[in-house]
Image 1 (cartoon, helix red, strand yellow):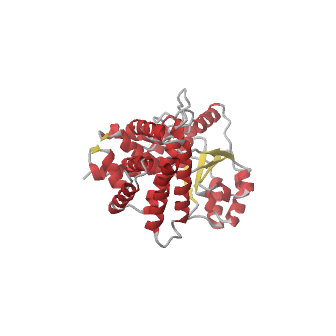
Image 2 (image 1 turned 120 degrees about the vertical axis):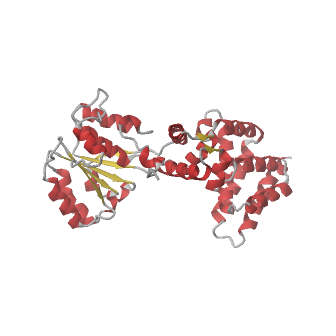
Image 3 (image 1 turned 90 degrees about the vertical axis):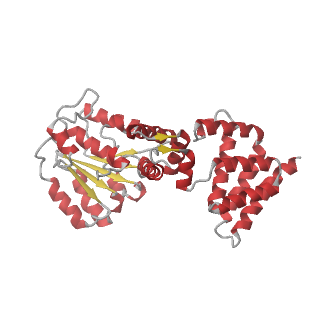
Length: 367
C-alpha cells in the first residue's frame, strides 16, 4: 500500500510565490534578501495554520540558495536547496519551545549558535511557540538574540505575541500574519482538488473554508476528512453531513416563517433540527450569523462582508430585500440574548423556543 501524505504536508508552500494571502510579508522578506538587509532576529506571529513556520523555512532556504532567481526565489536545484528539500540540511535548526523551554535548553542552543555553517552562508534557528519559554529561559536568551554571530539568524514563531517579554520584542523585526479569508482558502482548496482529480461543489468548499476559521492547515485537514468520507466526488450535502453543519436551507426557511408570523411552523422546524441531532446552542449561534449576513446584504457597500458562495449569496440578497433593517436588528438582539443565557439555562429547549417565538412576533407588531 502506498504511503498516504496528508494534504497539509503534500501541498505545503515551498516558495514565497506559493504562500497564500500573506503578500505584504513575503514581499518584505524578498526585498530584504534582494537588498542584503537581513536582520539577525525575526518574530512571526499570528493565528494557527496561516503560514508562520512555512514562511520561516522558505526564508531559511532562500537566503542559503546559491542560485537565486530574478524574483528572489530559491532555485531548488543547488546543493543547499536539495539538502533542505530532503530534510538533511545542517543550516536550518528547528526548536520546539513548548517542550524545550528551560534555561538548559537555551544554553545548549547558544553553544550551538557559535558553530559556523558547513554549507551556505547562514545558520537559521527557527524557534516555534516561543511564548512557551520560561522567564529564566527568555533572560538567558537575551544576549545571544541581541548580538549573535554574523552567520546566525533567529526566527521566532508564536500564536500569542502578548506573552513575550518586551525586551525580546525590541530585538526582533515583527511580522503579523493575517487570518486567511474564506475566498482565499476556498480557492486554494479548489486548486488542491484539481491536482488530486477530485470533483467538488463550490458551496462545499465554501463551508470547509468557513469551518477552518482562517487557518489553511485546518482547511486541508478537513478536506482530507471529507475525501475519506465521500471519495472522488464531494457535494455540498456530503460536507454538511460530515462536519455536522446546519444546512443554509433551514435558516432561509425559518426567516420566511418569521416574516409570516407562522409560530407553529417555526417550532416544528426547530424540532426537526433537534431531531437531526443538532445542538440548540449551535443552532442559535448559526441563526445569529444568518441574521447578521442578511443585514450586511441590505447595503451595497457591506455586501463584501458576506463570506458565502455565489448561488447562496444570491439567496441572501433576495431574502434581504424582504426583511427590513429594524426587524433584523431586533431579531439579532433576541438571538444574542439567547446565546448569552444558554449555558445558564436549566431548560435550554424552552429558552430557544421562547427566543424564536419573540422573533416571529416582531412582524406581528409591525402589522
